[in-house]
Length: 418
Image (cartoon, rainbow, N blue to C red):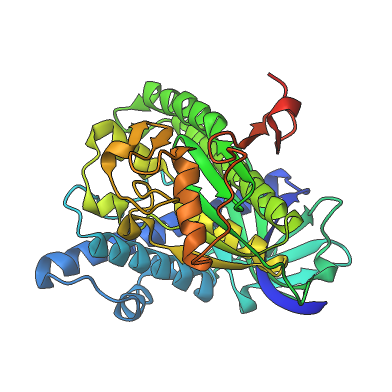
């Protein structure tokens, strides 16, 4: 066994959510939005005058002279400016005329509650009594106290006394209550020797993931994710007001995000666990990084691509695999044309994809699920001459693993309640 030091975010419930504590957290959250809006206006003005987006350094220097800067701890104010600068540069680098730059944080005349980050000198943690003191900014300090005392509960399975160090604390508004996020360094015991097998993982929209280990294949349909996306999008659109999103629309947006995040965590956890059980030492996962830029998929297709959180899923697979001592290699599936290349003979032809989920090679007559064919091609990037005993038809008839909404976990299809 070897010790691995890695970073994790631990979510905790706020247990002393009394009126005074919530009121103070609200004031910090709304102050964060004010700092964002002033910095957003400043960035726009500089952009209009110079044609360039200011870097975070000059933007911070300007913002330090604004009155709202002292509403928060200095490091917390800096974190908001860093987030805005990063969002602007990310938008600019997309080089997409249809993409919108970061907007203002406001709901009509109201400012929403922003996430506030407290770095080293902004919090003091007492793990023995499960309390954390969060610093107020100079403008918000009063005669009563200069900090907010939050009591928290991380649940029965997690204890902050076991972590190496807590690096940051964040207060996050979920849409109806505040919660605490602790960014920690954690020591994990991992196996010093991994398995010899390799696996390929193809990520998609209809099927969230397809996994090939050579002689076994797994399919993870995205039905639950699509149902949530449709339902909460309708909830959001039907309540959109003339002054921006209503409270219910904001709730729907937050709820959809939390459910999607839980779904992806459940799927990535199961993928890594199944690979570990099969002696996999290396996972090749498709990274469709360029697919949004290279083609126009139509209005509905582009919307689905926008909602497709493949980067999040890849990141979750990577850090969960790291805990198991499994290496993860990103494969540019678009460049390698993994979806139209036969994994048996190597022939490339769009016509081989007979239907959305069916791949039939005109050359060697291989019949396979198209996503699993792509997954096997990715596995071949790690193992150039993988075992190709496909007589059992596993590429055409995979084991299906479904997300069970009743338990919040992934299980074999036959075990999931209809």
